[in-house]
Image 1 (cartoon, rainbow, N blue to C red):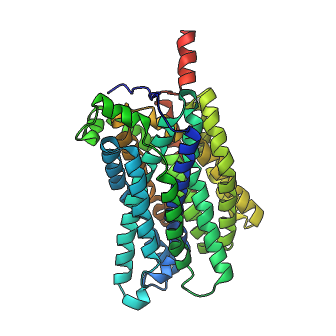
Image 2 (tube, one colour):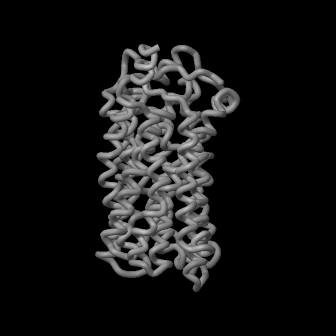
Image 3 (cartoon, one colour):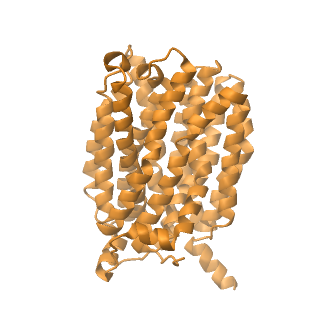
Length: 434
């Protein structure tokens, strides 16, 4: 296995705050595009695109199309990794935003099943696949731009800033749906968030075009370290790190979509409460996430990536059953608190350190490929988890999804134990002690 090189501190680089903010804004736009699909799949698509009178079957079918986007994310990760290591992180950053935004905008114009029959879900699946490719290409470029521009001892903090785009995008997506339902009536209101995506893409493009290329990539070019097939190199030399990333992400990405997308359908299918109450909790947790992600990222610069990560992974295990018990009460405040706690104490500690920790596991010449393939490989697995959770609920009730969530926490906890610490300050302390 190739020993990861240190993230180089070049002579010339953009202001790290500027770069991180630009990465975050674009990530927020892409997250908005991706998450409005998850909300629409849970709340609207079961009856809009699938010919069934059974609500349970409709939800299963809509979650199957949700999974399509996740299954295509590894392809986006492959393209992002390949071209990120060959043409530059900035090129991927801009291209992914365009692909994602156009696909999302076109979903807003799709005909329904009542209009064109089976062609409707076929077109939906096609655009969902393109969405998956765009979103899969996004993350690697965004976090590398932030991490590779950051001072060595603050990679955790600046690497966490682009991650804020995920909760910001989720808030925008859910608020848009809530406002659409408040101001408009009719079966067409699900189209509004998709059509508004084009405005957000324009804003994101304007901001990202003002950021310079990653200094680490410029150093790669100067040193002649550009490979024809960086993905093949990383799979040959660093495949273990790729597999570890997939395992590490299970509690974060799997838990996230169970807490948001699945629970949204669960409360409706079980008759516990209206879906809006889950959305309120999701919005609240996402707003807090803007602060908790930065806090956990900064903390990882002081105590290490692994310790912060384990906070979230272990909490996922411990909170799986209590979360569902709180939701099952039907009390609005309990549902909101359950969702908020899951997002801020299970998801956020893990997500905050992924950008810096994963980047530090690979040498610079294959770094884009390594993190993109690992990150999106996990997403492909996570994409089918809401579907599995619905199936488990239909089979054994709420305990099935609760056990699934706890198992995801176990997988990530075990993986974290066997992944080395990479935070520079922690490594320096260990060197001094020895």
